[in-house]
Length: 307
Image (cartoon, rainbow, N blue to C red; front, top):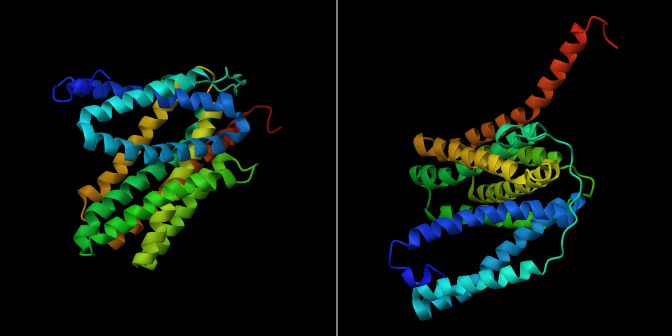
């Protein structure tokens, strides 16, 4: 509301920055409330439902926003957004007080680190890095390869559709399926798809692969989010969420830098992408293997011998 009559002044920029910061605060608070309202057994489904509602809200809100922009300019759009925020705040006040469940006794390390999330985080970071790699491969390597530019629209649309498809698939996952298994399946499936795409290089195969990447990346995110919500102790969701979200953003940037700073061919990029998924899979398994090796070494060094 404050920035609406000042859209032509520099005041708009700090107001926009505050709105972005509040958006992240809202995301952290929402992740904590999901556990309180949905319970530990329905976290993936609840997060997928919130994702569907977010997409539907963006789709439904675009038409009134465009109409307000056309009739009254950018200031009227901000007034409309302020009204929506006010109505949303009133609706939030009507929410029943949640019963906060007892969380798992995981200790939060420095800067929000949870040892129980190390292996799943590596797999989820691999999925994020692969998403950034694929996007910039389409932006740079596709242009250098001489393929038609409309391929970018087809493949980008398929990746976006894959993310939306994940919201429909997540609620239909088996009840007893662990979130760690979902992350592993996404990494392995996307890696196999990258190898197949390199071997059978064609637009239909590329489109199916882009769809699979979008689906696996979003499914992996939902699974890790549910695992994080369940593992983080009460009062530590903010620190834990910020830590892993920053790591995921850095992984996305690192993956995007590879095709942006190298002269990879479009087809060869999918072989590199398969390697990224392989590294993510090995990284997922490594913490558990090292822990077992340390445990075995400790038993061997025990003067009482193996028990």
